Amino acid sequence: MANGSRQAAWEFFGAELKRRRENAGITQVELGSRVFVSGGYIGQFEQAIRKPQLDVAQRIDESLQTDGIFERLWRKLIKEQPYTEYFAHAAELERMATEICEYAPMVVPGLLQTPEYARAVFVASNPLAADEYIEELLRGRMARTRLLKDATRPVYWAILHEAALRIPVGNPAVMAHQLDHIAALMQERKVLVQVLPFAAGAHPWMGKMVKLMEFEDTPPTVYTEGVRSANLLDDPAVVRHVQASYDLIRAAALSPEASLALIESAVEDHRRCANTT
Image (cartoon, rainbow, N blue to C red; front, side, top):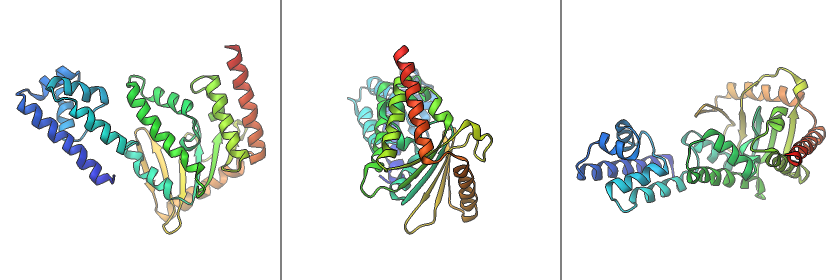
């Protein structure tokens, strides 16, 4: 579903919510108190400024006695939009790319994640979310990882800071499995991965996640991500600057062979921790 039609679908959700609320003769504040959100949130749902979580849609159905229509609409819309809005366009570009180069300072990139690792990341970011919401996010993430299994997959090159190998996401067993997965992809020659070791010290993108994507018939694009926000940059001068910085990091990183050895060593470290807990 294109972004425009997706937004129109959420606007229909909001308009239907307003119609049924008004038909029931209750205010936004009254409905909000029944479903444990503010009246202002109800207004934002009705204007399609905000999107409710599943449990709120379910409570709206209960309060308005709408026979599950808002839950069904929510599930339909989320199924068609497995990614957050700020990432949806980048996800589409990933599928079109002929080459993807990523730098990850603290976390394993989404395309390389295992389900257990991804779930731990999502729960850490959404500690109060319902299981259904976490599973929706996880399905979208795992759908992306299939890109690296396709026969026509793009060239994929990732540079991981050593911190991403050491931070215990989930638990030691989850980390051992995650790093085993990366090592297997490297050994199968499906991906190129390098590790920037702690000993490399300062580098151009300390704390920054960056993805460069190249395409067959369109200019390259840079994707950067912040807190609940992101940028897609295609200005040629900006892209050249980012590529130069990436090359500096690539030069400072360990060779693929040495990187694989470090990853396998980290696997054993996590596995020892798992066996002692």
